Length: 101
Image 1 (tube, helix red, strand yellow):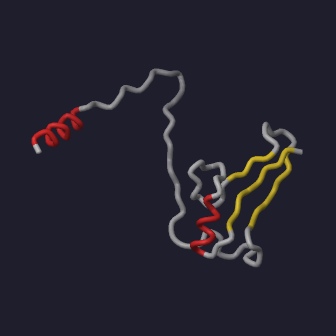
Image 2 (cartoon, one colour):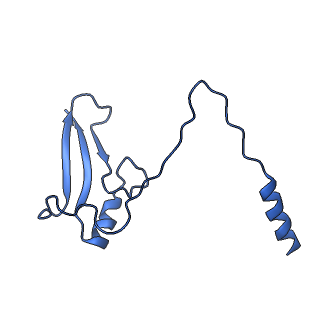
């Protein structure tokens, strides 16, 4: 028990690392997640999954999928998390696809 307390105390005494000095302003990350039930309450509900594609001339990759369900572990890119969300909630949200022309 004493060793656990010692570990806890030493853990509390560790100071955070000092930020690197750069010419760039500090970047902050904000995590945003949609909570609750469906994300798409009324748009094209007759479709199994709402997916929109946009053709763009200047893209590095031939196809990029962007998340619209807010549950992707790779947000803003889609990782397919909408499939689990749709199954659990009956929603029909899908990714935004950017296609290279």
